[in-house]
Image 1 (spheres, rainbow, N blue to C red):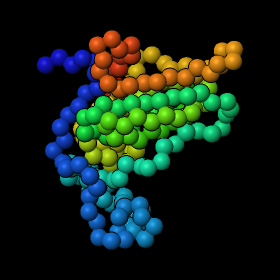
Image 2: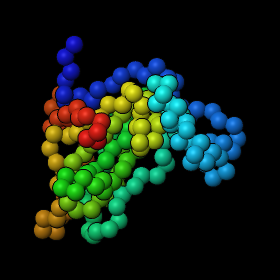
Image 3: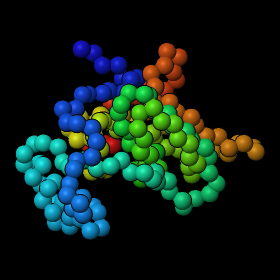
Length: 182
């Protein structure tokens, strides 16, 4: 079966969507919850048993670097497909992410990002396990084939609007990338 590199790849995950249940006060990462040692042992056990790590709630806040001025607009829209998305704008020279965006399928978000040229990389899956494990074994990682340039020209600020939705007359191809290049 051929894979169209212009379309994000999706795999059905054999694990249910949503957050795993933990006893009150013992959720991974909670203030009163499990310590880092318990979380580390849980992740080690996950690797030994070849099953998924404990799922996590998708972060509510997106992160955009606030170290430069001025800013340019950026909006991202995801398809209505039941998937979760984690997108990053990455400086290709340094490899540092200037924006981390967490979204559910069918959402549209608008941000302001620092001026510069960035790669758009994104991962998708059904259950979020955190930035280290992403969406577990079913994670699909992609990169836009062209960089996105945010700049000022005259009195206009140039930004981008990206829709991760397959379109007949689309102008952005995506490339599947290895997870370690995400």
